[in-house]
Length: 267
Image 1 (cartoon, helix red, strand yellow):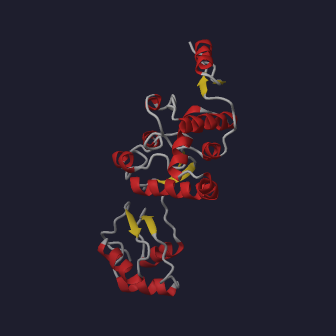
Image 2 (tube, rainbow, N blue to C red):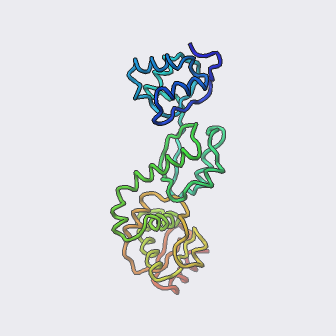
Image 3 (cartoon, rainbow, N blue to C red):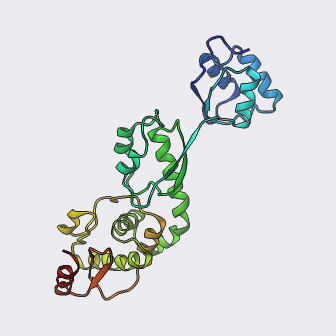
């Protein structure tokens, strides 16, 4: 039978790689089981002494030693998840705003905004546990970034540029263009301006109007299409571009042509 002080409504964490003895003592200390001996015995009978699944388990009601051992053996966490979609180009602050305290009571927004690596939180649809913390969420997004970017790593290495340079430029492109044709053309313009030592003059990051070279870090979290456009720019004769009031992009070879189009398409 479960202890009288069974912590109903709480969450326990089974550490990764925890041995059966240390796990049984941990559960006893948290008043989840009465007898570490019987927990170990049941686990061995289930052939789960090496198969107990790590992670967080929601204790929605009091349970017997057998019931709890069976859950941990099967990895039955019973933790609600929330479907979250991170759009391409979202910043760390915008992502943080998706985690409200009502749904994610363990999530520390201030910590997330301080330590999350801008540019490396992959935009995607996630099913996030309501028990997610700032650190676990960063790991979830970064692991997905690694998974999605890994196939293009050989291309990044062949480009002669660092991963950081690629992600920074991809973040600029993500903020400037909304279709692949324009992404690849903007990519060509940005790489040429960098090569010529010209300021990037990117609307989404005003300081690039004033300084040569790349920003110190990505300005948002780009998606795979912008990363691919960074690696595969379309060769153009242009050095300038702008987005008109109608949302269309216009390209120019010379500064005078650029100014004329600015007066024509931006009011």
